[in-house]
Length: 357
Image 1 (cartoon, one colour):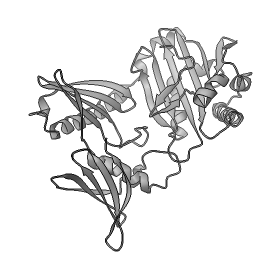
Image 2: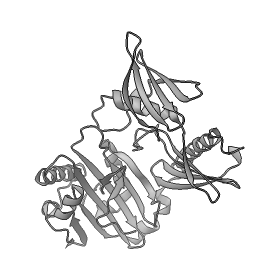
Image 3: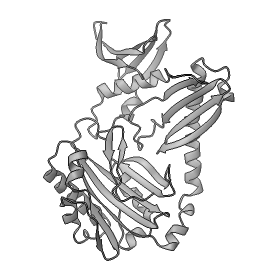
Image 4: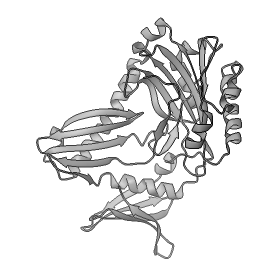
């Protein structure tokens, strides 16, 4: 997997790549894993933790700002080592939703300048010109390959940035498997087990399997703390996409898992799952005053108290938050929902509605 000008689409928005440095432009590549912490220190959300990429042989880490609310731009950061190409690379990017290109270039240049300053070094010669260039042709300076995004990428994706790479040393390539510690692997496995258990529980509650515990599971990692779980038996297959939406360092985008079921040789049907958690997502989305662009206000979610009220025709969840009462009502036949607030007079006023997927 060769990363040159690689951009990931995450929840409908393009995020690009980024990095951190050391004392010189050469030795900044010698310990790429150490570069990943910088992005998290800026408050960026984890898209990929350092380790093997979901596809290919590269080791990567990737971070990006979230873009909720009135976010004018988001920054991206990415580090990689690719044994197939023999390269180690870093990149920074910025996507400006409400900026003209000149503003985006200035903001991107400031972002890159502070990035290098944090590593105790100036911006590499010519980098500012590459960021602002209309073309994206790579330049070679002192063994480094440097390329920007160019005007065409701005027109298509509202993104500016650069990638910087060089040949990886033999020692670096040989150290990749040892760069992920047993403790990190153990934590990843623990999170995965919790997420699989959520999927298995949702499958059991769907009424489409006699014994969810006996379903055979296959797990595919998608991004940091996000997995796709396939649960199968002789009757069919459940497909469950789930993310650790309790972890504030991860960009899950929403709360609650997505569940579907396919009978052998039949169509796939979407199933209701974790509806109380999804109602809490919509409630916090309506009430949050957070200004950091995050989709989930975890501090607010922690204060929500939810109770399910049994009803034959509807799923009903009552919420209490800071002395205020709310309810989320979901029709069972089509999953249309309304979120309501109870006034001091005891009347219910609608806040938001839609389809609970």
